[in-house]
Amino acid sequence: MSRYMVNKLMWEVDTGDRALAEFKEDPGSFLASWEARYERPVPPHPGGGRLTDAEREAFRARDYGALYAMGANPFLLWQFARSVSVPEEMGIEELISSFREAVAPHGYPDFHT
Amino acid sequence: MAELVGVLGVTHNPLMWSSLRGSTPPDLVEVAANFDRLRARVGELAPDVIVLVASDHFHMLMMANMPAFMIGKAPEMRAGHPNEGRVFGLPPANLPGDSDLGSHLLGGSDLAPGFDFAFSDEPWLDHSFLVPLLFLTPHLDIPVVPVLTNCNAPPIPVAARFAALGTHLADRIDSFPATRRVLVVGSGHLAHELGGPRQFLGESPDPDFDEKAVWWMGRGDLDSAVASTSFHRLTEAGNESYQFLNFITCLAAARGRPANLAEGTPTRFGNLPFFAWDAP
Picture 1 (cartoon, rainbow over the protein chains, first blue to last red):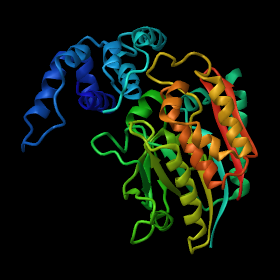
Picture 2 (cartoon, each protein chain N blue to C red; picture 1 turned 90 degrees about the vertical axis):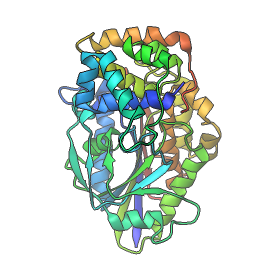
Picture 3 (tube, chains in turn purple, brown; picture 1 turned 120 degrees about the vertical axis):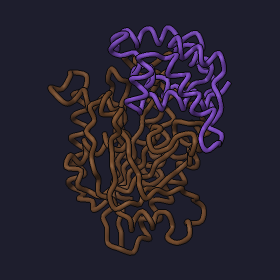
Picture 4 (cartoon, one colour; picture 1 turned 60 degrees about the horizontal axis):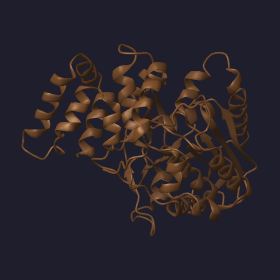
């Protein structure tokens, strides 16, 4: 589990117009280049860590329930979900209800980083 | 000498900005009226500077670098971020600051004993600052000293530290040697949830918490407010309720006296906080 990197990715996508466009276009390809940037930085320094396979898959599938259950910061998760899913994938009302359905089974997971 | 002329506490829900742009929706009539009341109050108090206590939402501070409390001491600063413009229609703005007062709140050359603030000479404020200012000071012409708090990335400071922050700010305002009329404004939420199972329910996620919270402010019961707002209890009230802690700072800055306005205004977004204290 690498909650910090999950939060960092969501934050970069929500606050960066280019990152948001790239993620919407192709999450898999965005993830590959984003992770590569932090795994092999120049000059080399730790870029905050790596995503786990489960986190990577949850991002690829836009599985907000899984990210929530793994301890993604709820505020960042909602900002991220709204930015990547609305309006192209669904309307805001549909996102509100599908998001609630996705996170409700998980209660209130610890979201400390 | 500087004078603390009053303390206000308001919601910073950014959906209020988008929802109150055109005609006022029926459930927000009282919210608009409370903003009008407090805007008139700011006019009467005629502050020279506003010390604005609010929680940053990962715009200025991210988990790569997360202080508990930060004071912005720049002579001018930006407010409003691009993603907030995109989602909420918030207009980006430049705000005047007050470096002398900001430096004095920090402590001068030495940090004041008892409060190890971070500081910023280039603050860039988000909606928790901009929304209150747009409603209370629409011309954005009163200098601001922002006090950024961490209410979003646990571990967050305990309620007693938010109370100590309020006392510290009031003490430092009292000891500021230049003439200033200083208004303290806090922004935050009552019970509130975002990104969890109880978001956008059409009502408060915890009306019982809201009732108590308003009572603490209206009765000036700082001890109960501090004793009843652990991380665990605030999570029960909703996973964004940590931002209520900014109002504990307000109550302490008002020296724990009863607020003369204390209301959780009911709306489809939950009960929205409005608080006002006279000068201590």
